[in-house]
Image 1 (cartoon, rainbow, N blue to C red):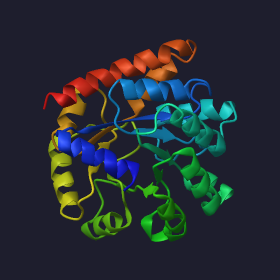
Image 2 (image 1 turned 30 degrees about the vertical axis):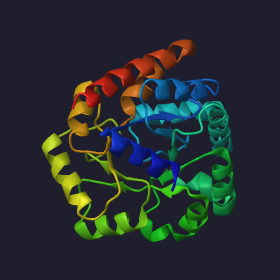
Image 3 (image 1 turned 135 degrees about the horizontal axis):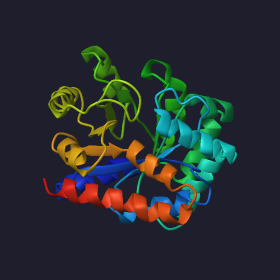
Image 4 (image 1 turned 45 degrees about the horizontal axis):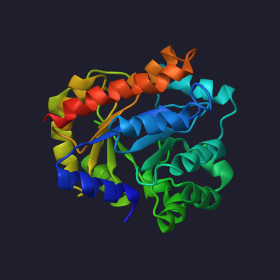
Amino acid sequence: MSRISDRYKQLEERGRVALIPFVTAGDPGPAVTVPLMHAMVEAGADIIELGVPFSDPMADGPVIQRASERALEHGISLRDVLAMVHKFRERDTSTPVVLMGYLNPIEVMGYEVFALAAHEAGVDGVLTVDLPPEEADDLLSSLRPRDIDPIFLMAPTTTEDRMQRICDTASGFVYYVSVKGITGAGHLAIGDVAAKTAQIRKHTRLPVGVGFGIKDAKTAQAVAQVADAVIVGSVLVKRIEELRETPEEIAPAVAMILSSMRHAIDLI
């Protein structure tokens, strides 16, 4: 059983909805990321989604695009991100870590080399935004023997047939993008999210995480009533951007946002 599956089993036994924060590795500087990861866990994060900086993050809005740019200015590479996960694992051996990014850096490293390095670093899942399940066999054959879960996105426009294909290919959890468009955009319609998560559950027993459009404790609580995980990113990355000149303030500020969400989620 992967660390992600084990975590969801624990959460289910406790009747708890997962809180999954996203931050970009190396933003606003390399020294910030690992302490921030620990602070997020202490604030109630159940799984961490760590963004791999990329020069053309097509699914991301301006806030996360700028985070990638700041990290790339420091020369942060995929190997650097794996080193950060390895450092995180020196203190935390139980919190699952999912890498979220794009295929090019993985292809450059090579699937087998990447999968082995990710496993040794302590990575638990990989979400490659621009890799559809139809083209994922080579990467999957490298990830699965190392108990690394491939995670795929679903959108409001995903058809029933494609939903089934994604569910058959994914493991760990499935990620439902709750709004059309890029990260940080759009209005969150909870009724539509509830209908779509119910539709997804007809195709899989995997947990369903919902992200994009979650901006505060209120929206986190609303999503938690219909999903197995609340995934939050842009609001955290925006706070990091605001505090980039005072990096020592970043971890407490992000932890405060997550703590308020965790409290709201736990009230349902």
